[in-house]
Image (cartoon, rainbow, N blue to C red; front, side, top):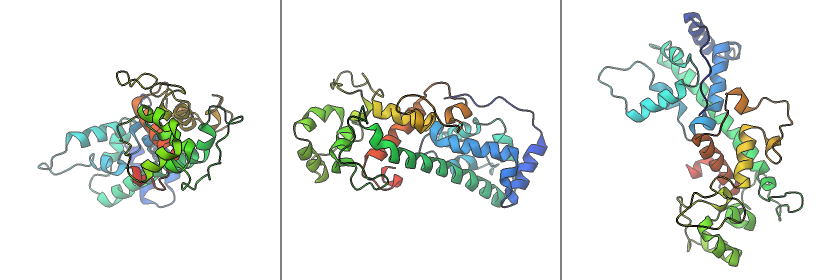
Length: 283
């Protein structure tokens, strides 16, 4: 995981200004510290995972009654989010005694986190049909996927199904793709959550039960999704960033791929390939 930003000169006035901004609806964008924390909230799904609970993690930092215990899991969640910015802890402490205002602060950051994740969902869902074929120009997805409409994805489309089928079953799938899809849809064949889908592996990878990690996370669909999220959609196919928008990886000091990024990109790709209409269906 990338390191947090280096400490900056700060004093109590930063926190006071933050609290004042939160208490004044519509003016929070003008406060530098709050803008910085909102930026980190946008980064949370990418660096802490798609199911990280910002609201719950922040509440762990409020001063509590002495007899109230905090679980190790909650402590780790609080540490993870506050490590994203050097003034996160002092900002949270500044709300002690005003739970209503703190709740507004926590909701604001949680909403921005959800918004960022929603933007990634939309981007990947729209782009996935161009990322499925190794060469989208000469071998486009046929029939074309319907963008944001998911009814034709998943096991209802042979190419999305081919990407989703576990590598251990891909040879059986290729013998009769439509029959395999029908059996998944009618429940006579169950795809386990622990079985790695084919899109995580390079084309032509042969399943080896003794070496299931060989080639894992080297599939072009997965890599394109990873690039699309962290280094812009324009870089996904050829690696070149052509937009003027700042890259998420650059903004937050990401210099290497870390486990949470792999998990987030894989989850986003799987959702885009699937026929699920709601993110909550895969939670």
